[in-house]
Image 1 (cartoon, protein in one colour):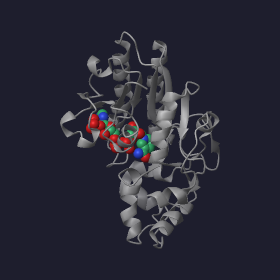
Image 2: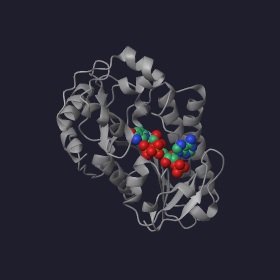
Image 3: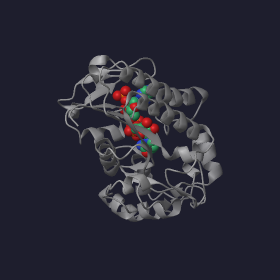
Image 4: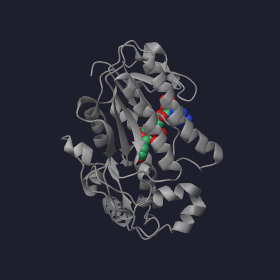
Length: 297
Ligand SMILES: NC(=O)c1ccc[n+]([C@@H]2O[C@H](COP(=O)([O-])OP(=O)(O)OC[C@H]3O[C@@H](n4cnc5c(N)ncnc54)[C@H](OP(=O)(O)O)[C@@H]3O)[C@@H](O)[C@H]2O)c1
């Protein structure tokens, strides 16, 4: 990769991804707030919801990583929040592709984020990339988001959509919120704890994005989750072990629904996702079991 471009670079996953790339162009709504760790990267102002990216940001780029989107886990899913979740991803992807369409020579690859929300909640079913999509808000957002990204194939761009699971890292995502609760000894199962959780260490996920850009054999959906998903109760015990605290305080489903509304369905969804496409292409996970991943955190 000579010139990568990253959207959502300032986010939790984007920062890890950028640390693996050489001087990527950063597309952001607020160049003035881009932290100094981005060093030699050129930053370009872009609001995914309203416009195509500036041509100079894409000029001569050979790979685009697309991660921008309104946070899903922050705040209640009001009507306006849901509109932002959808528009920032689907509208944002259409706008990005309008920018690629205007290029004389489009990049060779687009690696776009998607989410395991695509699969809905499926009890104990093993979910490889072939499993059909579910219905429901997030599943429909993911389908439209992926469909928008795939239109770049018309331009001769190879497109990979990474269906991301629960991303584990110190600096953000779910762990940053959960760890303080577990450290107080106030952690516990969510609902009955039987639901499967497709987790991935953020360092493996960043490596998977780069791997997808560099491996021509990969295209279409790629599950972005570790090979050993765990049930919520086993995840809870593993987090408790890692911080040496008991995990005696379950959050019953009704309480979760009261506390966070419709987002509770995401926490309670059972998704036994397997990363078949990544492993078939030769990707090696450094954190394939939950205890090793938590130990690194
Ligand atoms: N973290 C997870 O566990 C997880 C799981 C499944 C899927 N994903 C997906 O992976 C992508 C990256 O996740 P992340 O955890 O790194 O997200 P994040 O930390 O919330 O960062 C997302 C980035 O998107 C941009 N953004 C935020 N709100 C926006 C809006 N309303 N319109 C347009 N852009 C907006 C921001 O960049 P600027 O402020 O610089 O513009 C932000 O840095 C997301 O699309 C997310 O849905 C994440």
